[in-house]
Length: 139
Image (cartoon, rainbow, N blue to C red; front, side, top):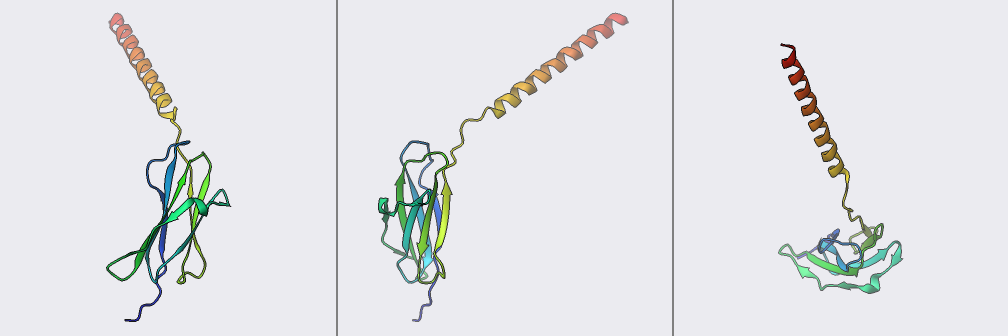
């Protein structure tokens, strides 16, 4: 059989929900490539952190392509930017995927809107009651 090269389809994502200051794991997944293997490099804020990562063996798919995973243990800090760059012979240039630490802090917006809505509603009920009572006194 003659196999041509298949470029990997790459993605980057956290293994679990990310909490600031708590150690977590980022995964760089290269899928459906041929021939194996891929080479994966990691950066944090532009600084190479590849030595802190692990690279799995490559796993075969039924269509004779392969999957491979790289894991990076990290402690997220707000604003950090992580990249995984995948090199493979079928890629003209390395493919870089980016993941940013953007953990939402609890927002006060919904509570404020709820409070304002409740206050306006109560004011409307009080005004309606006032005019109802005044109207009944005139008759």
